[in-house]
Length: 124
Image (cartoon, rainbow, N blue to C red):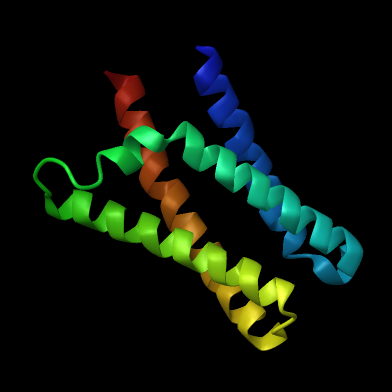
């Protein structure tokens, strides 16, 4: 495996683990929850930097229905992630819980879509 792929995989696994730990804030406590949130932010930034080619290509080429759906999901996921971060920083508990739940749902969809895409590439 190339180094970039290994880095991407490690970051993706780290984001997933941290997301699940963040969902257990009653058990981890608020201080750890805040540090994990900051760590997730760093990993999401790194994830997007490693996937800049996708962002650069977002306005190029033709869009099939599948490509539109992927683009919409990814943009919604990014917007929701920013809302989770902002609502957490502002201690807007109700909004934070709603956006966090939506983030979890969008993340599951994101993983499923990209898992299928990666699996199809590996089978070739």
